[in-house]
View 1 (cartoon, rainbow, N blue to C red):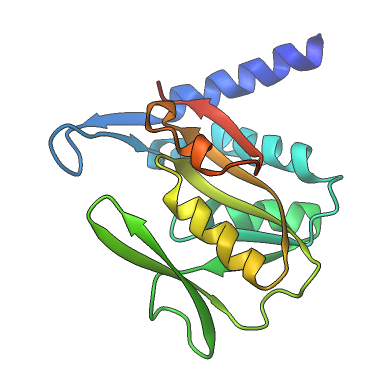
View 2 (view 1 turned 90 degrees about the vertical axis):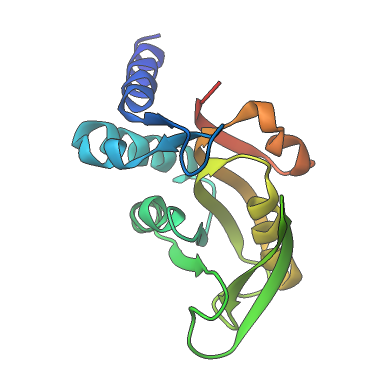
Length: 182
C-alpha cells in the first residue's frame, strides 16, 4: 500500500508539472507542454523512474524513441535498463542507409526512418514518446520495427489524449501511460 501511495504521489507530481496551453499550435487545440515537466527535476526524475521500474526486468534490448520528444525520455530509460537507444526520425535526418515507414496524418502523410542495422531480428523493443493522440506515429514505429523482425514489447508515453482513441489503433499492442490529459 505504501508503494502505491508513493506511486500515486509521483503520478500526481508529473501531472501537475505538465502545462496545458490553449489554442496552440492552432485554435481549438489544447497543447500538452512537457517543457515545464523538464524544468521540475523531481517530476522529471519521477517520470524516468516509473518507466525504468516498469521495464527493468522485461528483457528489453532496444528503446526506440520517436522524434523529437521520445529523444528526451528514451535515452535515460535505455541507459538505466541496459538497452541501446534507437532514434526513429523524420525523413532525411539520418545519414547513411535507412528504412522508412509512411503513415497518414489528419491532413496528408509523413514518414519515419531508422538506420539499417540499428536493430536485429529477434530483439525486444520498447517504443517511447511523450504523448499518444490518434496513435498514427506509434503505429508507424511499431510497423517499422516489426518489418525487421523486432518484437515490440510495449509502447510507453507520458501523456494520453484518450478522447482521440489512439490506444484503439494499436490493436493488441500494450500501451503504458503515466497521465491521462482528459
